[in-house]
Length: 74
Image (cartoon, rainbow, N blue to C red):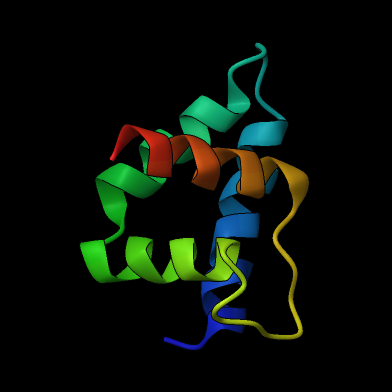
């Protein structure tokens, strides 16, 4: 999958959870990605975090926090 598509998807998930009440949105985004993305997609997301895969689309701050939490939990 292209990095742009992957980042776009992560940002869409983050946009949804940003509208939900509470202060655990990043945790909920990370849980969604863990539950519904296959391991290769998560590994590619981590590569985007590390700057190994770049594209025109940038991770939103919430998506970035969720990806960092997800990586720590892995």
